[in-house]
Length: 200
Length: 257
Image (tube, rainbow over all chains, first blue to last red; front, side):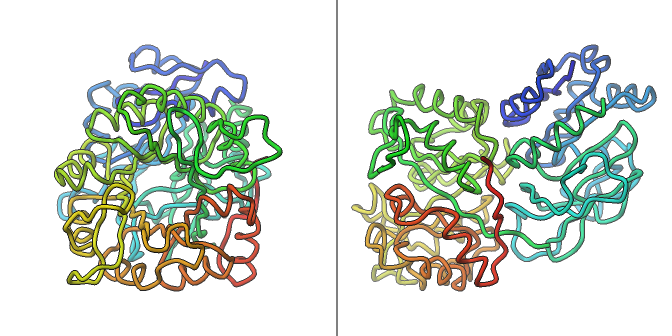
């Protein structure tokens, strides 16, 4: 069973439908025990980093993630759901960055392109050995964000370019995350989701 | 590797039915917004926009139902506008499966609504829709309401500057002079707006031939929205994409069928 963590973040319905498309049993939940023990956990995320962290704290996400990481249980973070897995974000302040869940050590920083948010379809260069992008190298995915990580993380880093290179996806054993929205990325997105589900 | 220009078909929906010049022979029900959205997605649309033009607020449940059904089968971004007046309206639409919400009159009546929505859901969900026309205001463009019939008594560039500070994700700029004329986008208007905002700009109104789309991009648009040229089959989405791709613009040429 795949659980989608509901912490009050925007559009969960598209994520639910896209993951259900694989034929898997998918539930939307905010219950700690369900989120801890599910075969796989999806952390969606839209909106501001600090608002997401505040909502995540309300559903004890720190405890959930720590449990899953130490037991090597699969997690899939999407968009801000990727960003919160890093150690800190400069979104609310450059001087006083806000702490994330700290699965990976890097910082989430503001993109330098003059037109923000980075909104629309962009090409992803799949990292060497990527399972997530199996059959999907150089495909286009849908992005909506102004902040990103610009250093490699985990075991496999995949990249996108919007005036500067930034992390489009991270694969770190059972913990994966994408800066783009696979549930909104048409056929390529559904294929990526099914690649992930096949790996479970 | 660079961000693609988005091509966005817009569907006007009244009481759960697509209205205004839809002429598709290969559809069982060309009035069904869900079927239309699926078709456009399969034909390569980068996003879909629904504009609820129902006169009555009683149609809100119908719109939610349309959004719900569309989100079940169309896996590209969906923007919904028309009749959005409060944070609660936005919440309901997002929960039904919309990704972005466009607001227009309600923001003019109460600009704080922009920051209220941005604080709750993030500014990326908010598309500021501006119906503008040429007029003797400071910038030469004014904001209108009621589909371009009534002046809002506000300079368009002043309004866009103000709204940008309150927190919007992008701007949908509709030229009410060019709308329906098929004589090209209002390029001066696009240039004027581009010069005062750093969010993505969607140009709308006036597309009649393929060259018009390129001219709007040169003027500063990041995305292009059109209704009748697609509905009437003047050209297909892929025609626009191939044309712009041949001119050197990055386009997403894969379809979703």
